[in-house]
Length: 350
View 1 (cartoon, helix red, strand yellow):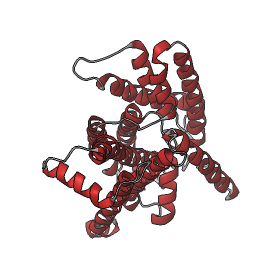
View 2 (cartoon, rainbow, N blue to C red; view 1 turned 45 degrees about the vertical axis):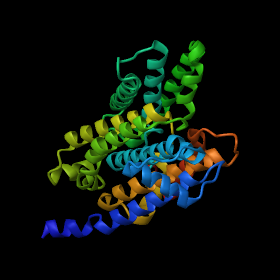
View 3 (tube, helix red, strand yellow; view 1 turned 60 degrees about the horizontal axis):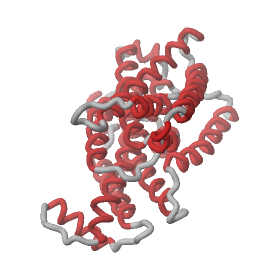
């Protein structure tokens, strides 16, 4: 009886189908739109030929579609899905709508690690992206561990307000250290500045594969914890009483989320507040049930960041805005709005 109920309450197959179709349509729109608009028919024809392995005639459309826009749009979609999923999982775990890789300092820590790899010239022969990706993942996870350790030392109950406060402080510290690296970066200034603002310009299919692998592995782990996160929603003690291994689930979610955030940072730099904005908006539509919320968040995050990236490269064309700046502007307004509504409702931020 319980299994049948869980299936009915889970995310239906037509939800996956509708979300996939809508995401693909938005991706196609983002590939077509830009400083040089391209007809949708021509875009579909070029992509279709490339997928089938049929030679595509050389020219401007092929160069723009296959070499510039398609990998960038795919990176935006995968990064948005990953960051939004991580934010939703962290919010469910900590029972706080303000929890996110940005507000907890995880993104800043990942950016610091990637920048440090650039400054020190750390590289792995034959794997040019492995060093920055590995350092970003390591620092993202290390940042989360430091934040939780300090929060536990200050408050053994690990109240979410304490975790958020320490996260904001740690984020400021990471930004200061990043600024210090920039001051001594010399000719590497341009590369490091990229990590502070976030950008998907010039991304390649190698980056697409890295993001896809991270989303499948780490994202799969987070999606598999939907029932456990539902149990956390009514408190850790209650989750423990119904048989949830609380500590193991916490570590599993935090490791997967921090690793996935590190991968996203290593590809696109610091793209803040996606994990704050998207889960909050999705929760207003689907409710708090993580069986429905997490899959919807994946599609919504992909669509949100693809459209944000489109806005960043077209609003002031030919000038391109850093995507991290655009998401941070939107996220700052949302952050204040969520905090205000929480305080007005007399619930604090828990």
